Length: 392
Image (cartoon, rainbow, N blue to C red; front, side):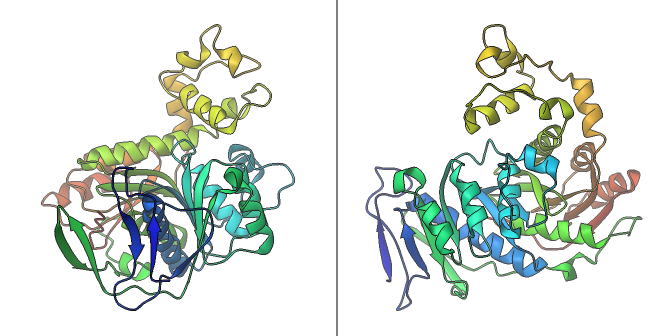
């Protein structure tokens, strides 16, 4: 199959629409279920590249949760503890495989943004992964293969219309790529820059102690950024992208946005959040929205009298700003990556507030000295890669 017709493009008025191969090559995919659309395939192909590169760089199963051509979350397949299972809403008795752990973690980076996501797996989708996905609102999935049991489960989603795409893991695209904008064709070499531990050696701070776990997290951050709409900043902890700030015109706004998401991830571990008592049969999306509002400055919207009873069995006490700051301050070991240089030290200041000890960025700002000095002030380790990772 060299081409596949689509219902429409980004919007219903954009017709005709299709995906196709130039020359004589076949499409490297097979649609096993559903009818993926234009944006679905944009998410599918970008997310597949991300997880494939994460797997190649770390040797571990990897997964991503994509929305509108940027990752809402990405993660490696590290085991999940009992507290993590509760936070990530893993059903009792479900034994998670490494690839299932990767997706559960990726989905849990930002559950609000992952609503209606596109899932990507570096490894074969197995039954535990499919069972978890079955209960989540998702548009589709791409993986190099599916077990029989997993495919049967996924085919029951969305009244049988869930999008399931299988990709040839050996497919390698042509070196040059093309894009039309306003009837004008752009051409560039594909971004095949390889991200691995070898690019992390230029440590520019006084503290040069970069443990293997931080190197791994730097690779997770950089590979995630490689497929995130620029400008972008990514916070990573324990192989898990816990905050992604995408598509902002200002670098500091990326750092704040990603940092706020990381803070929210930390706060989901707070005992007060774990003890929230929801009404019976509440939907997952409603519960996720409730937690998000509860943790925000607009908590009164959900805790007002006559309103909280729709969500909680017992009215919870809100977390004060001081309690939030105190809880977030307990976390450390975070790695922050940026797809282009930090122009000012304020980005480092903001990253520190969310537990950052390690920073990886291209470098090259005329104020690099100020940025390095700010990192030194907090005894951080910062690596300059010399490579920008813009993605548009």
